[in-house]
Length: 132
Image (cartoon, rainbow, N blue to C red; front, side, top):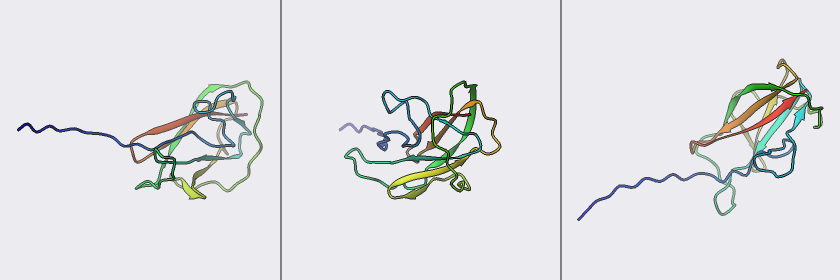
């Protein structure tokens, strides 16, 4: 008799960040979102099982510290948001969506920023947005 060991990884179905952010990695034919610098950007997504039903992770999704990227020249193409900013580094849940209200106050405008989430299944998802 032979004993074998196998390992496997179960992950969530992640279909991208939701509006008002254009997620160019998951949405075809959209431009990168450009927001007003100093505004509060609602960052939203959903976590699902392979069959499409909503799932609650064992631990809350973690906000990744934004990383400043290259300069941008595009004009603002998104509405201004003035929501209260999220405190801490975890997303909150509302209506099946995970939401983080990212305050861009004090960040240099005129640049792209990579923002994202780390899930408890070990996966990380990011999106680039611009601040003008």
